[in-house]
Length: 567
Image (cartoon, rainbow, N blue to C red; front, side, top):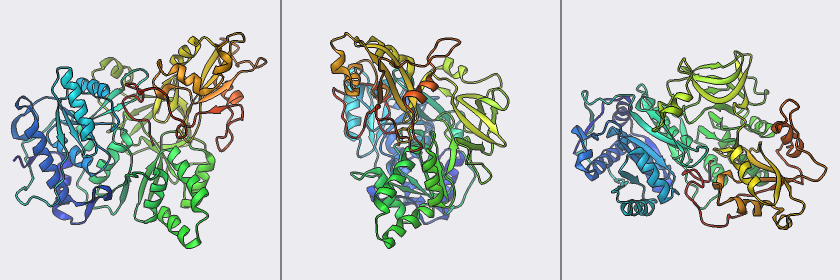
């Protein structure tokens, strides 16, 4: 069995923790795991050997490393202890881990395996059936795929004494993790992050406790537990099971030991609503447990989109301090900017100042597109040199596609540099594509798609339509469900409108005087105005994702190969 680990600081840190600490570093109650660093390293080494032994000999190199210059292995697992064991084992083989959705379809997995040039899937205990379905599908296409189950030992193996091999080096620019992010059409883009992303100096236990609950195929689910563990934090795993995630988060926070929590605006909104609708009515002694639990957070972070002012006010009162607002992208895999104690959080959409080591500039001086250089910057898009070149300027700053302006030392986010997209959870929805297919429907005479803010979903795809007066189909089609059904064979599910407003005879869509083009900002204000609590007019029909089910079978890339939940 190979017991030598690559000469990288991430493995040096893991060995440091295993030699100098006895406390639990990962607590995963759903898997009945309470692992200290010794247990973690034993499981990582066993998993490493299991993967290596399962690989074709042509994929195996010297000293337990994979032979390819850029090998990669797909990981199909929930965001639990199994994922962390698999992640470190894969990286110890010199390979890049590729976290994928537990709900990935066979056709989607086939495409990702081919694009990553991977022939191996490491699967958690809950995902073995899905992994084997993919294996069978690949075999029907004439391609062999190995499925390796993630196995966890109950007790450390005394004969395994891992050590760093000083001569076993891996180029730090080699891919370490490949994260797929929703594209505008078809399969998602593969964002490649180099191994240097995981390098960090030796750290002792920090005393911090990070709550990890997100799925691993989103950057906020795959990266933070690894980085927090390497920073000396204890990782607490939360898998809600049959319980609603909002209720599960409150119940875990009630125990009072969580110190770091990061959520998107929709999650912070639902947590606030749950407190007001359910917890506030509890007896004082019971209510106090929840209040004290959340107030023990050292870091309460929000990122992803605009947060309603009323929600920010709620949390400022609850926590005794404002939520720490951050700005990040999948291409950076770590916060780029963040508010601090000196930030004027009364300014709406304030994203604070650049983090240490990050350089930010705006394309037009004190305003314009956000351009970034960072140690955490991705190295490129998978097999797409043209797209990679297009997002870097002449000075190698990454063009984020977001606009901002300066207010003192803080940055204020103004929105996307392109108005061609709407946001829905973590997905980018191309407006022109949706409008084209709406226009093709025989009962619609005029339409436009508008991006409408919503803290529950990070944004809405709103359809503003006018029906043909004389088309016999129109009366039966005057609702959102029927329009979604008629578009479902042409558009992925995440691109379908979730708001509908029907134009009356006397109503006109506002257009710019100079070009005669639709003024989308004005149209949103006129037809989809939102109150402070993001309430909409009665004339607007809203699609309820939880209460209503889609008709017809799910298609490949309906959710960009990711998931229909981005919380």
